[in-house]
Length: 401
Image (tube, rainbow, N blue to C red; front, side, top):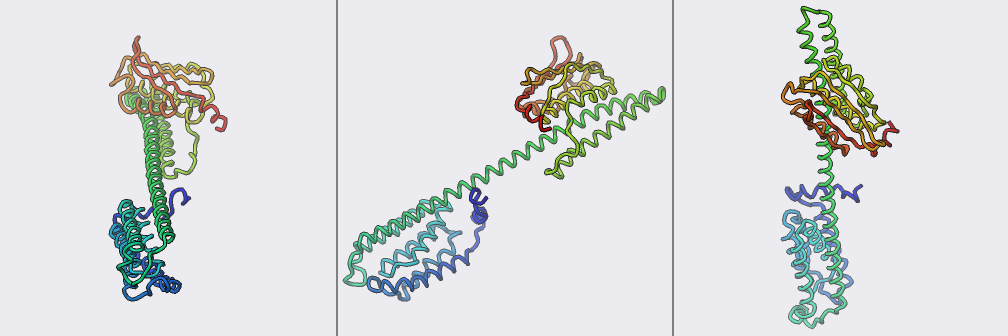
């Protein structure tokens, strides 16, 4: 809505300040209005003011024509227009649309950030008019002229104050629009970064687990290819199934990039697929015991819990010399879910818990939900991953799943 974020033509002003154009149309319209309007206004002031002559028309043309440079030189234009208008009125010519040119120049300068220059130019105009109307008129034509009434001076002062107030209000509103635009752009960049991080975590979790299983099964198949072809065939079958599943999950993640507005074609995995993880771990030579039952979880928490268990078991397969792991699930009054994944080590790779993006990804998933991850060696040997995920904020969401 433009009244919140500003009309489109406001948003182009920043670019115009770097490469300003020439406002021909508006300048021509204002010039025509000032010249024609002054002729009309002069008809009612012939008794008090001097008639328009060529010098007066030149001053009117200069005051309005200077607006053509208002985008490139706002300070010079506001001073030039104010001086031309001051000379015009000081010479005794009729009041009229010449004040419009001063108002436009002042408004333009203030909105573009030249507040002091605009205030100074308007001050020069008002002070000059007051001096001419109440003091210098004695030495200026026409002879025998009288001082202007102070009521008229009050009208000029009110007009000046109104122009400054409107200009300052427009400047404030424009700065607010620019600030809101920058905040929206920053929020959009933050959302894009969060989405890229989410996709990176998904791809890492999917590929790390699947490739670990494929790697183990490929080693089994190569070792038994000659001595036990049937077992090698089983390993190859597992590789085929796991690679197909990994390709499907990667395709689902990539589909969200191509069509971000569409809902996923398949539901996100959750702890209901824990038996599947146990079977996959068993095919990789890892025995997994599961203790406890998961509570009702919201989709986001369910996915995070599944990926944490998946990554922890993947790290056991890749980095631990243990062939046995335990997964313990516990929850207290529906407030928090505790996931504990233990293996008996010792480390068979770089570290029993991994040293790459796996632990960082688990911590990011838990932190996104307001939870925590603790991972490290156990005092009695082996490695432990302990995840604590809050459930209160997600319990209600589960009902809509």
